[in-house]
Structure formats: structure tokens, C-alpha cells
Image (cartoon, rainbow, N blue to C red; front, side, top):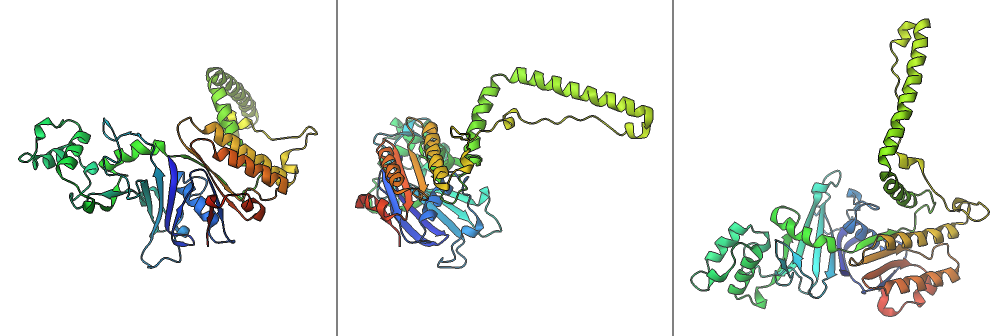
Length: 393
């Protein structure tokens, strides 16, 4: 899936904003504090809610009504031609289920209630924004159980051949009801279809694994090789390696613990000779750590100088390319990938800025790849086609 449009409401400095996006490269420009980073972080919250987590403080002070305490982040996707999703047991097309919006996008709206002291998992509600024939149905058919769909089908017994409908498959019943209902364009209207609970959840489960992988590189990060982002991949690798020798490691750990406890018991035995009261209070206890916590890494040059001792521009350049390499390593052949970079030119020599930009352009031309970046660099902006620039004011 490719992201084509973003809509946010009551989020930080935005009362309401819609941004249309290019299929590959998107350069977001604007003055300081206009909300460039907000767009990238809104997407991080939408896709991951990990590197940036939504918070009550994100509720916009510019909202129209004081009692409107809902934060909305909405993303519209292009759905691949011929792409089917298994909502029930049979693959079906989102267009046949009236689950696309008026522009033929798959639009997912996430709404967080910020009325309390904190935002929890229960604060989130998820919807599909669909151009749905609400004039024909009191509630979306995709939210109904098969028993209710069968009842709806009975209403057409006298006017249509319902005997030919496979009544054991929900999608077949829904498609029959849609056909029999003689739906016209005037019957369609924007409808919020809940998809995070009960029967609606099966829709979200079917489509969310097709969402793009989203990777955000922030401008205000410390840019040290001791950062969690840099160390975690080694821990993952270490765990996978150690997992193949877990039996041997457990045996080794048991030997070490046993030997240490034996030393403790011998010490207590000698203490008994001098002070039984204290000795009787003591129990030998050995603490252990996870094997992967024993390993870490850094980047060093041939003179042994670690990255932390290099200039900020070099540190950032290395970590920018580490970010690219890790994101590329985690992508799959089918899922789209979004690289979001906040001011990648920061602390970089002009020559490196141009090289980095060319690398990002080349990356954006890779199938199923989008680049979102913010910039303050006029020279970088001048290299970007106007169609790829997204100005904010």
C-alpha cells in the first residue's frame, strides 16, 4: 500500500490539516515551528506508537471547541489493483464491500480520546472511512454476524432468487444483498465503520498486515552509537545466535550458580564457628543476567577512535546510513516501506547533503518505497521537482 493522503485534527499545532502525498518522494518544507515534524510524528503514532507515543499533551490548544477532546490521525492508502483481502473465509475486494472512500482510497481513521489524565489502549477507536450505501442499511453489513445477514436476506425472498445464494459464507450473503438492493450513487455517503472490536476487527486484521513499514529518523536524537536504536539490532542478532546454543548455556549457568553457592555455603559454615547467630540468617543467592546483555558494539576507525568522539556531522551521517541499512534489512518483498527523515541535512557538508539527497531519490524510485523528509536547506529544496514538494504554512 502507498500512502496518498494524511488528515489530522486536534493534534498539537494543527486544528485540522489535510496533506496529499506523492507516490515516491515527498519533501515537506516550511518555517520553524510550522508543524513539519508533527506530520512525521503523527505517522509514527499511527503506524507504530513506539518511538513517539501519543500523549494527552498532544491535544491541540487551537481546537474549535473546548469539549472536543478527540485527537484524529487519518491515513488514506492506494490499494493495489486486483488486491483481495480475506475478511471472512473467502477473499473479497474492498470495493465490492463498499470499504473505499469517495476517492477510491482505503482510509483508516484512528481517534484517541484525550479527556482523561492519560491516553491508554482503551482510548483508541479505529474506523474505516467509507463511501458506503448508508441510505440502504441501518448499519454496515461487514459488521454483522452471519445470522443477522441471513435475516436481512430473507427480506428479498419474494423479489429475488435467494435460493442460489451460499448462505454459509458471509461475503456471499453480503454481495447478494448489495446486488438486490439496487444501490445508486445517491445512496452513498461518508460513513465511519468501526473496525477495532467484535466483527469489525476481522476487517482490520485482514488489511493491517499490508500496511507499509514506517521508519522515522528524528533530527533531535543524540546520534550516539550507544543509542537504543543502534544497540537493539545487535541484541536481536545475539539472541538468535545464543538461542541455538541455549542448552549448553543453561548447563554452564547451572554450573556457575552451583559453584558460587558452594562457596557461599562453605563461607557460612566457617562463620558458624565464630558467630552462629549471623550465620543462621544468611542464604547464598546468585544473580544472573541475560547472555545478550553481555554484548555491545561501537563503530571505530582504523586508529581506534569511536564514533562518539567524532564530529556531530560524521556521527549523524553514519547513523543515517545505519538507519537506511536497518530499515532495508527489515523490509519484505511485498510490503511497502516508508522512510521518514527529519532534516537529514543537519550538520552535513553541502557535498554530503547532495550525495544523501541523490541516495534518497534513488531509494524512492524503488518499488513500494516512499520517502518523507523535512528540510530547511534551500540548496536541497532546489534539487527537488516542484511536484515532490509539500509546503506547509
